[in-house]
Length: 258
Image (cartoon, rainbow, N blue to C red; front, side, top):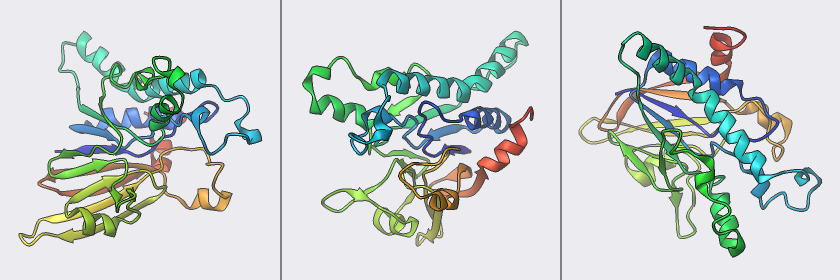
């Protein structure tokens, strides 16, 4: 089994989204069996509780957030739709990978907004993002999905307060199985092994976007790795990891690339 992993994209109005189309083209070229998005596809910055009252918060609108998410999804899936349209015309087999979308804390902003203001019940909803209409299996925030012995979750909580596990080594020590998480920017991974020799891998990869996050200093933004992951020969928790940087995707598929 081959699994393509897409870390946090945090799509919002006014940012560059070409990398999503590059990723869609890469997906069609490599044809993974499963595509897993680790959550925070949408940023939902109009519902951010951290920026309320700040000058930067002015002008943010919920409907603009939803529209940006839909546009980003169309860019990501456009190459797949084009491929399958051509396949249908040529009477060839269509490519239909399993697509898994994990809920992130940014999608959770919609639920929290409704919980904090009952008047919004029935007005705002996760359904507005249309993930399932776009063909994804949606799994709620912090509900792990197990695929071939590998656990995928936006982040893995630990302790009574449920704070995120912050290192790949700690993931292995606490979860005792191969785990892949997003949430934290950059890329880190650690390896271990079971008594039977099966290799276990812990991965934290939480940044796949071109913009710089306002809450980080510029130098910190530039230090983080941005890209997607391909997990090859996935079986019983064991796999080979292949990072694919956003710079590679740009060179391969950007500016008229195939």
